[in-house]
Amino acid sequence: MAEIQLGVIEARFAEMIWEHEPVTSSELVKLAAEAFTWKRTTTHTVLKRLCEKGLFQNNKGTVTCLMTRQQFYSLQSRQFVENTFDGSLPAFIAAFTKSSTLTPQEAEEIRKMIDKAEER
Image 1: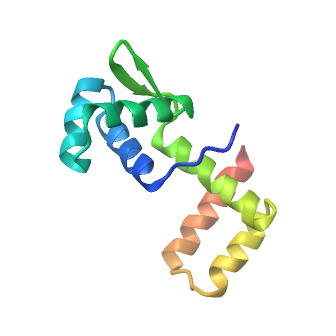
Image 2: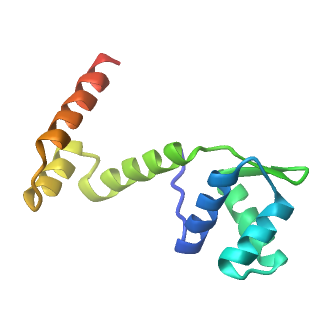
């Protein structure tokens, strides 16, 4: 899957869509006017960009997601590990835990995730 980059405002707008979807484009115009003081044209321009990036679709004025919030952030996490740690999850974890300790609960949660991933 292609890398998807979002600016800060695009990310906030995407969060708004995920929170309200399915949502009409006219409702998004109202929400964006309140949250960002955007004009209608700005809302439609940013929405069009997010649709072109493959996150959402606008079908006859109803906006729905093509990629859920969880799918998007999972992709972003994988891209970060790939770009920063040459795809090595152990290198990422080593860097993360070098300056921070895990609580027993976090360690147990990670063990469960590893066990579940190994079962697949």
